[in-house]
Image 1 (tube, rainbow, N blue to C red):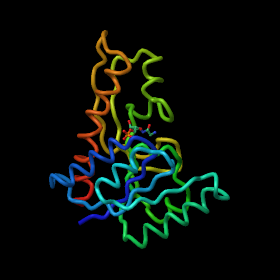
Image 2 (image 1 turned 180 degrees about the vertical axis):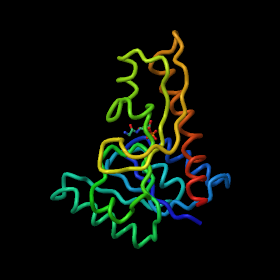
Image 3 (image 1 turned 30 degrees about the horizontal axis):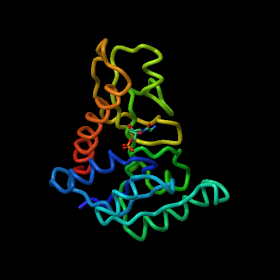
Image 4 (image 1 turned 45 degrees about the horizontal axis):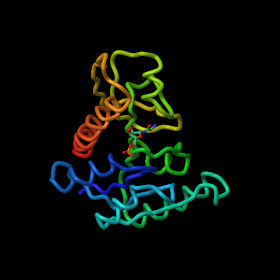
Length: 188
Ligand code: GAR
């Protein structure tokens, strides 16, 4: 069984989709740890409900990324984690984790990368008036939403779709695409 850690900063609906896919036995993995950088993040409640241990930290209490990533690394080693799965984790991964988990860190992003990296990808795409939007799953490198693309899924933006419709459609796609893509990755 592949041991994974989920990294999340907020609501954690993607983390939940992964936990649910594992429960349904569609994804053969075990969530050994949830790493969270926000005190009030809802994902922590989800973790508690599923009996998953959370490693919680506040970046501002540390003297730089290396320092808190070393602490995260200790915990990941203790739990024998093999893959890091970013699911709405709003921080760049640093050298400490990139070195230890080479080609074993994956992220999901709500745009067809390389278009619209960074924060508020959906808002950026709407401001542009794009007619096709989508979701990308990719390997993580030192950049912001860069790294080789593993999977993408697109959809057409209809005239009548507002931000809420688009967000819902993005989430619907993410919640299926992420577990499905991870299952393919873990098979090799
Ligand atoms: C997701 O839409 C994910 O693609 C996005 O944050 C959202 C988290 O939602 N990630 C990024 O923008 C990464 N740059 P969730 O907390 O409900 O899973």
